[in-house]
Image 1 (tube, one colour):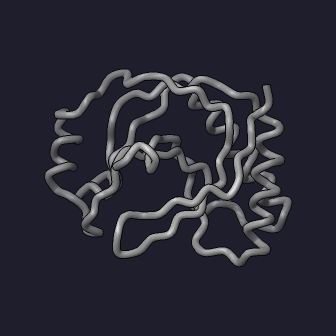
Image 2: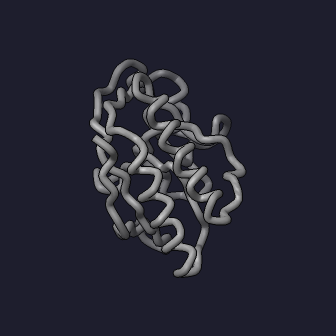
Length: 155
């Protein structure tokens, strides 16, 4: 996956009408203003789903993961105050590294990740100092990600 497509998803929506996108923009800005920037340790590699062929390969979050959870919760609260329902899936902090091209996933990648052939320890540290609102468009080729807004986190 190209570096530009690696990401931390804090909240995902299926298609939204334009007026609701503006509501998400407002919620994201409000959430970002209340959370200070932080360092996030990346450690370990895993894949989704937990069983069967791998569809997504991810890096786990160590130190700083609690700040990422707090940011996701702030976003959820701001969205809820704007009439959005709560997320139906629990937030699982991770950095998406790769996605299978085949919608059915990859048994070979799953075997490599689950068998320990991929790094299990510390992978590095990143500074989280802004929140990006991104619109993803899926199609026959690789996903396209369009940046809609950038919100700096509080200092």
